[in-house]
Length: 270
Image (cartoon, rainbow, N blue to C red; front, side):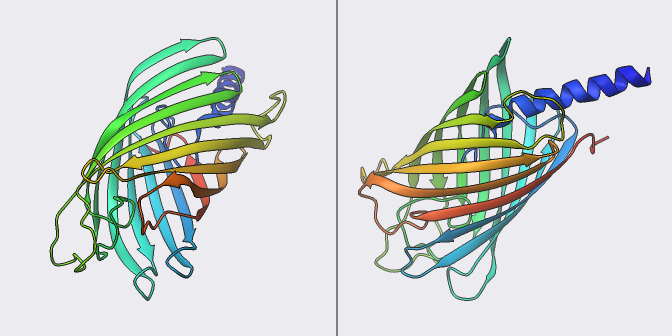
């Protein structure tokens, strides 16, 4: 019996390891974290166009309730308005409603929603619910795994809450925003899986876009990234996004690096 348990744990770890190329850096996949698991993240974002350098830190806790449902709770802290301070927080939920599994491939579809609050002044037309704006968002994610390559598309719609007390005179007031992304991830190492302690190396390339339906302004960012996974539990991300095209001015997430450390605790929820 003990041997069977060990074999099951190793196979489970190998399964998670094989699909690590779905753990995108700038977007979420349609797949969920393992059932009854808890994840802890710490993300730092740095922006170079404000006009000087500013940064944001995002502590985050994630809960995998079952194979179909997971939630994130985030807090946002930054020095964008002077001294470093707490800006607000966010709750994110994702429900996987479709799974098609085949040998070394699968397809997933999920719906997601987010509600956020922020006490930042409104400076830009762009709606960013991870620190800059209060509002709600919903959408769909579609992810296809093809052996070592994972492809994912996201479609979302966000609405910013009106707060005239924080509206800066003469600055645009964001209202609604379409968002869309296309992400790819490729497993570089290991070439052949041997055990769960082997480091995983994934490379990513993502295209991240938004359109303001009111003004017609839009932008498209390119975002390459690299990721290392250790012992199937610890994840380290390093990425950079930059604008490839667009006419939406005064953005905060333009020219932004991202560094993240994530730690996962399996079977932590009883």
